[in-house]
Image (cartoon, rainbow, N blue to C red; front, side):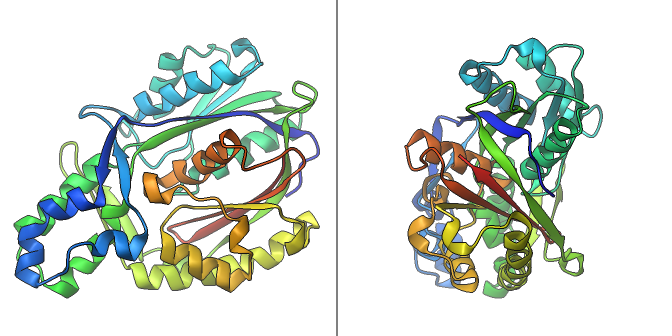
Length: 343
């Protein structure tokens, strides 16, 4: 896919105030660690994640999504009346019906003339929503869209802690739950529009997607009673399959956008942890100095992770005008989507 007329006009992140450290999680898991004779410090050592954020109890995904939406409106130079499409693109949803976008749309104060719906595809939802918006802008159907995502990982972490402490699990049996403890919370939003509306916007060049649904069983999550979530992940197999899919996608991606590996000034990847980053960069033969990461302090925030990291890199001046950026997204399913942005 290629786009000639689509720009990212603005990006904004909204984060919870409460910080939950990996050390604090392991304090709560001390009875499990003592029973299984596990060394403390392994969570941060194995993932590189020192801490993550947690929304206050009772926060809905639409609350988080709306907070990011209001934040991006404060940064945007576009009138709110220009927004013709709004998508909530998170894994987290308020309920099955209506769309979480309905609640966030009202809380942000978006116009009644805007189409609204949810786009959900594990950790790729935000990038998928960007592609949907870009296609509509490129085709002339709309001229301006807002994409927002609010992930609430707190219920998953809490349910995982209850499971690990409440059941007589063995070392082997706790493995599928380990990835849950890396999950964090956050929100991000973006304004995309036709370049005529924002001549100085950041050009969305195009990208490519690939699927390997033979691996759809490697990471599965669902509700777990009232206000609780459950997820089990074969982390080792998911890492191997994910990197393999990324290699296939990377080759096709460079061909599609016409950039060589050396052309990229910066890479923003889905934020899983230090091992995933190292394996991915080694497999794709990428320069690790071109990476920008947030997993150390935010953990894995699902669909929020990649776009929030892009926004943070921009806010910290780690991206310069004219930089060629590769957005390397991957999510359970397995699905991979890579997009090229010229800043």
